[in-house]
Image (cartoon, rainbow, N blue to C red; front, side, top):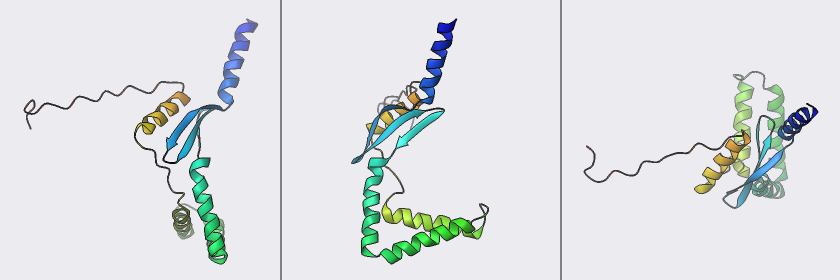
Length: 145
């Protein structure tokens, strides 16, 4: 009986401890996929590195402009009440401008890496990715057009 409990405890601890499942190549960067309790964590360090360099370049070129934009974001974050408030819309707009400026608004994944990312995310749930069957293209004249 104690062995069964120990096995259950080991499996439970394994689900709590982050477990790196693999890496997905996203352009020139990598996305690390880690299983965590109840889901997945995507490590975007490589993908965000160029954005940090762009941010440093923005600061070197015009520290006052960058500083004032960040101050506006901070003030609006404090003033933003509900989701429909004017300050919330202004905050969202300023943050979008900032993220666009540093290029940190998306990480693009292409071709087979999309399949790999999907498979790793399914693995985080303890499942295999569902098999997708793509029907062969119909021959010319084989179907009514």
